[in-house]
Amino acid sequence: MYSISILLIYALVAEVFRRCCVILLGAFTGPLSKIPGPMIGKFTSWPWIIQCVKGNQMNIGPRLFKKYGDIVRVGPADIIFRDKATIQKILIDDDFRKSRDYESAREDPNVTSLITETDKVKYKQKRRLLSPGFSITYLNGLEPLMHECLQAFTKVLDARCKDEGGCATVDMNRVLGNLTSDVMSAASFGGSFNLVESDDNTQKNIFTSYLKRVALDAQFPFIKYLPGVPLASSLISGLVEDIVSKRRKEIEEGIMKKDILQIFIDTNNADPVSFTDKHIRAEMILFMIAGSDTTSLTATFTLLLLLNNQEKLKELISEIDSTFPSLEDTITFAKTQDLPYLNSVINESMRIMPIVTAGIVRLVPETTILCGFEVPKDTIVSAWINEMQRDSRIWPDPDTFIPERWLGDYKGVSADRKAFLPFSAGSRNCIGQQFALKELRLILATLIRRYELSLVQGQSHELRVHTVPWFKQGFYKVRVKVRT
Ligand code: HEM
Image (tube, rainbow, N blue to C red; front, side, top):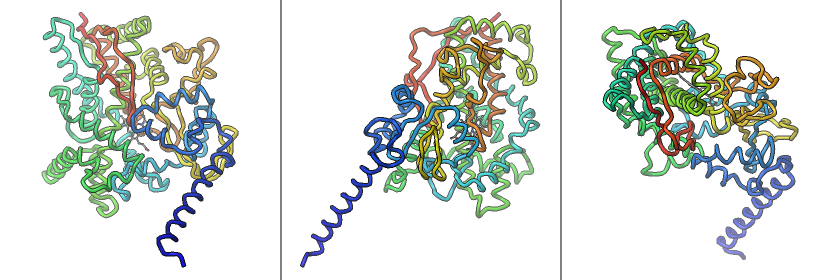
């Protein structure tokens, strides 16, 4: 007779043996075995996951594509893609649902936000609810408010120039982050955070820590259940709760606002069971982050590219100066909307330095053919739009900043808009795209018209990514002088 413990040991060994066989079979005989990639990826996703957590995936991915081609296996059921046809299929034609990474990023599995909802029907309801907050009429109504934030911004920059003897050295990444946070809070939550004036970095640090935690939670969902480990939102919830309670008090006093926060509060009032206070908090955190860092980084990257390509900067200055001849001219949505060179500069910047620097992750719903390979149900597939946007088969001189390619043919090739998806695409594209473009045009036109901007030499452009990228050195400095 065997004792129970010996039987348990046999069972354990048998299970380990079974798992090893499954991994080996999957590695060398399964449908994914034909997909090229590093040998280790056939057995485990761990090296890839570690790079995600370190924020270094954006540097490793391109090297893998260079070595293995358009499709690379980075884990037993984890594939990355860069070719246009597959990206089009994943995001638009077949509109694959979001992967489990988004579910893991929720801190309460039952509380979804617009970005973490993976159920297509529930997602549609959420998106419909928010659409009034992104209608063209509503967005146009935000113009005075954006002007107010920009006025505060130029006042602060002017004062810094004066204090520093006429020419200030400014961390553009930081001041633009302050500005877009103020615009977002003023437009969506009924009051600016006034970060432009206070330059208080506490909130920014909270957001950065929050994003790092979310990246960790997405890979290791169990972490949030460990005793003594606070939830990611504990970093940010005080701020959010203050805003919500202030708004509830205003409603009691009869002050009514028509913004995104009001949509959340009305939904909660109408159905407090399925849209709880936790849902309000999750949505607000999403909007605070999705609506500020994305735009400020895009503006910073655009300035970085312009400053490193002086001819293009001169061309843009000339377009903006002829549209706004006097320093006192008001820079408006209407006038910036159709400026060809400004729009080309923004497009080219988002092509070459998009804020999505790693793949957009989806789950294969049923066995399908991708890039000529059979890919089974439940495989995680990532659409690397940043790599597609630098594909030399689509973009001549792909790594060079050439706004002119958006104005007409460049080297006989016209810009392929289907291979340009900085706001993602399909049903889960960016809801804030028009908001962001309007804001970007105002910010860039204001900066270019009002200031002489010059390069601070020798700065690193190295980035890391946790949901959105950040400069590894922690800043991007630009010299700023008021134009006369
Ligand atoms: C230049 C600025 C921006 C860029 C490049 C950008 C890009 C993107 C991308 C690529 C996604 C898809 C992410 C994914 O599938 O995981 C996304 C989603 C989203 N963006 Fe933006 N975004 C910008 C500005 C904004 C602004 C200003 C707002 C809000 C006012 C916003 C709100 C959102 C929201 C709520 C989502 C989630 C949508 C969903 O999952 O359905 N974004 N954005």
